Length: 217
View: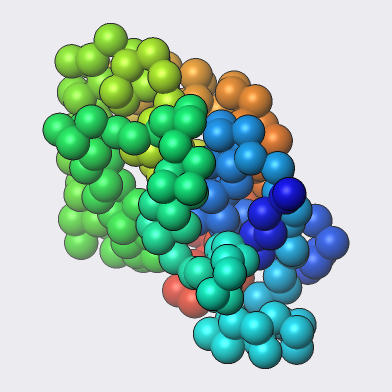
């Protein structure tokens, strides 16, 4: 029996999958674990009444369970790992926090209009730390040859970093961070990523709908 998962619909086009990296994390988990599922696309600007009645907070992603809708991608992926332990996506504890500060650093830089505020440098520091961590492993993924939850959580966020900053600020991940570029290429070429990603233009459109985000080039 297929599980039901509520995920973000595209900004301006509620009939197709949107750009939420947290929704994509859940969808990649489902794909990697080969769990049958159905998507409920939720227009965050006009949430359907049935969803608000079932899940008053109206947040996505959310997983339908026997006890109602479970929101928060951390909790959802944890439950999926418990309920569907094979194939395992558990990350070795020493690798579990790799790249965890990249997304907030990206958002800070994306919203910044002051080149002297240190936001770009903060993101570079986190990307350099990721590059170093990748250089110390066997690859192509953070914990080795197989995708684990640390990759599932990071890759959608890292891809948003790449796409949104190039389109909206004209900024690209430095070429010298070769391990990061190889990692992004390997991860985004997986079937699970390809089947669950929004197009680049929808990613950019989604970010432009956020408060404090504007095109600066």
